[in-house]
Image 1 (tube, rainbow, N blue to C red):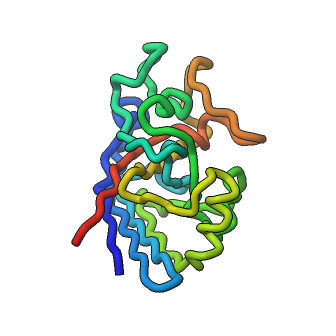
Image 2: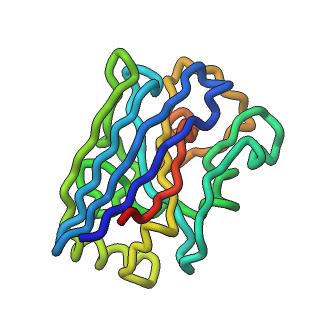
Length: 185
């Protein structure tokens, strides 16, 4: 059994009015990956996309901070995270092993901005799809970061905030929290 954990800290909290935070754990055992994420103080009653991001070549990913606000609009948008965090890799949705990212099957926070997510994933299927997408079946979780995304449509975002993915705009993709995944023994 191999365990990983991420302490998830706020990002863009000075602009979105909440300081989203929580934890994520990943447990690899036999052919299963158990993913558990618990978040607090996210924007209430909002769907929250969540993924791990990283570099396909295995280079260690780092969390984005306000320093990544390249266009100085006060927001660190999805595109601005890529330089330090890499690309979106695996979603934490209803079926992470399928690696189907743009859709509306992610957790929704309650009236208090809380949500809890647990999923047991067939590791071999996830690894096969990961290899097809990124050239290696090694997830290298300790080289990745987790992002939580999503703010209400009512939040006024400047046009400089990028993040359109398919039919989903920057309200869906704006990062609200991030954590470095570390192996725990």
